[in-house]
Length: 302
View 1 (cartoon, helix red, strand yellow):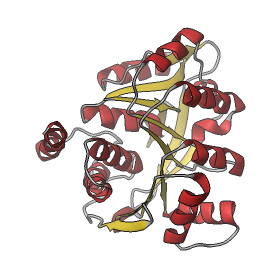
View 2 (cartoon, helix red, strand yellow):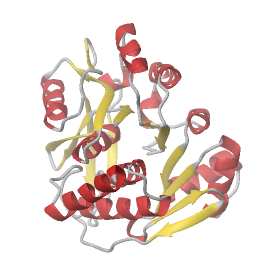
View 3 (cartoon, rainbow, N blue to C red):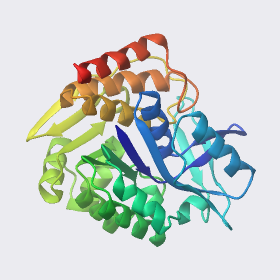
């Protein structure tokens, strides 16, 4: 199945060392490891980090046809600081290549001719008008089975208008506890319980599924007027960079394989828990996780 992702590809600088990242890139990499065909729409600079990013995409089996080299802007870099529990804070450079993603008409035509299982995007890459306009064009050109919106709010790079439009364009939305509080105040001018928030979001913006993650305390999934909870897994934490992206990948992969919403959330917890126990956003999967993935593929085939 083909998966299309739109947004940032960048380098996270952690303790002075560069790690390839960006939420859409991480999500694409995990979905590719699970056997889906991931295509990322983004831009890198005409520089050493840009060339290295394209090699990383190729190494991780991400289709880089739509990752264009920007003639003037540099490849994105983010300074990441980790606290004692491995939780990150980010300093995100502006005026970088992924702030001005480029697609020509031939590439747009190619997108329209492909059958997509899901289109995924977030909020950060919408911090420029050019990207917001391009994303709307992409959404109007492709007709995926699902449109997945991960809020992934960073610093002050979001506006109510962008978020509301994104919700209107989506069928599945994912957010965390902190983002749920922000959304409650931003959209409805009050502090709502998470079930009330999920219900209102679905009603107001015609969404099918709302996923709210709670870190080690699991996640809540709202669908068809019902909130279900998937238990967390209290394992060791090396760092949480990419933890949310791995949860998204596990949820989407399982759901696309035909599992129930609850089963998809359970599998997402398994993947996310493993990833945060390792260093880096897309670590090598152990044999037991590879087997879980194969079992889900078999379930779909069977």
